[in-house]
Length: 102
Image (cartoon, rainbow, N blue to C red; front, side):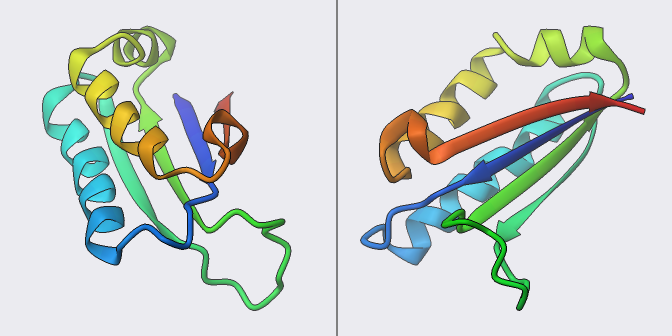
């Protein structure tokens, strides 16, 4: 399996409803992309304070690398990515993505 973890720095001026729309769009990808097995996401909620300015995160699990590789250029992913990028602080500087296998 491939785990896809994404950390986001969402601008403070973005309305809560717009942030919720982004996460709904991300969650809907599970219904549209074969091999996308699970999705979870939301705002940072730990009292540790180790988030280094990242305000939100999401995680996806793919059946295998081929499923993840189909997801990357998928039109629904591209649409969701546009929504994510539109709310970030600093554009691409406001996102970190890491994939790993298990």
